[in-house]
Image (tube, rainbow, N blue to C red):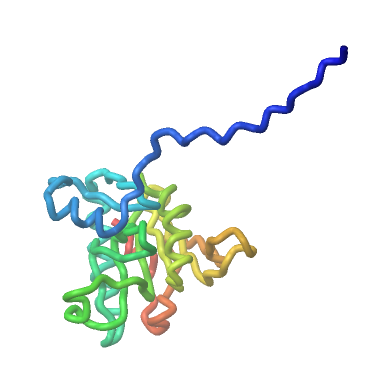
Amino acid sequence: MTATATLTPPSAPPTPGPQPHRWTIAEYRQLGKLGLFHDTKTMLIDGEILTMVLPAPPHDTSLSLAMEYLRTAFPVGHYVRNQMALDIGTRNDPGPDLAVVQGSIRDYATRTPTSAVLVVEVADSSLFLDTTKKAELYATAGVPDYWVIDLDGRRLLVYRDPAPFPAGLGATAYRTHQTLGPADSIAPLAAPGAAVRVADLLP
């Protein structure tokens, strides 16, 4: 007598185990309203809440220098936001150090801007994040001009010309990268007549 093999149908894929919760901007801001962050500075990146190191005096000095420069550089019709919210997708609020947006202060009394003509980050411990994930987010949001003031390297990193990656990758990157030293000068794309020396942005 010949035995007959019985084919067992493949089992269904296992039910996924516990998954991390990805916060939306609305949820993230509600947590802030409830006081759960206390005095901790945070940002929302890909649905994850990241805590940030309290800024040291060199960071604050560079931030203030850049703020004063941008206020004089940009024409009427632009507003320089200092460490305020910027909506970059439904799960991202990177909390840029400085963002130059179109319009005036009162234009954002009831809404958060979703893009900017220039974003500036002052980087020490955050340099890797600022030049990788944040650069991708700002490029994807269509920010044409992105500057990173590298305090430790005493240089300015400039990212421009955002363009999509090849089809299917679902992201955008800056095609033009510049590294400028203290003696170099540059002007924002949206204010070409207002050049600044990199040294004037450094503490």
